[in-house]
Length: 329
Image (cartoon, rainbow, N blue to C red; front, side, top):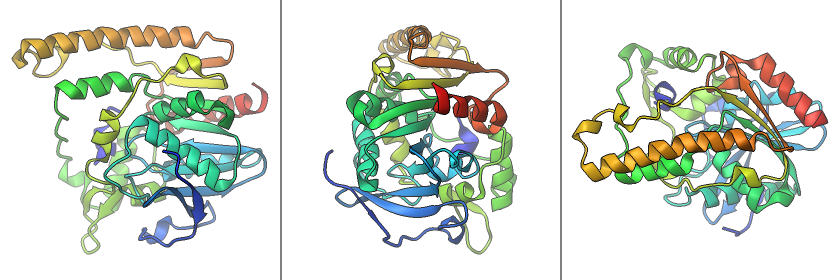
């Protein structure tokens, strides 16, 4: 149950109406239409079309979420944009292939979505882990990117991938029984954890429940998807993004000490030294990002009293800054 454990290929593409097994509540609705976009042989992504007037604006969710996490936020931009959201491969109602979770392939998936929609260029909004694939798109296909909005994105994905090359994925902690007793209990627990309620479709699309008891069963994803994405993170060059950028972030200073990691004293000496090096590089990456945010095409804003899902915890401020940026920057 990822929400309660927060750490917080050029082929072809086409839009289809192929039916897929999705929860009844997650289909086309007054909020959006649900479509399918073929991005590779045997791989289709779920596309949410919120409608609207104007240039394309595409939302990309963080790791563990689906496009439905923006169901209550994306519609607020339809007056000036045609708004979409995408669920990456391996999650929710998108295909669950056993390959293609590296940064470059996930980035190419985004480009294939644009091709399938017949969109030459779009502005993008990326949350958390989407920052890596979005930056890959912006630097490898700059002709496709009008503007970029980063919502508390991960800037050190490559360092995390290195970390996971020397240490195994930590096992997920067990949720409290009362938090998984029902769909309503899970939704309430997620709201407490992230600082705001997830849209109903996100709860249904990202989780599976026992049809008889209503008890939470598991996350709705390919079992190895999150690990493959994290191990597939590659270094991206934020400074090379030429599009206009709005960078909204939560200030969470790092301790900078590898020694503070659980079980550090029991690790082999080569592993300890590797983790010390990675910790130092992570602090350096933070300093690099502060420098990047001073570039003329960047506007960086630190959100006070915010949490990782910034459009939930700081809705009015994030909405205002995004609309101003998209309209005027």
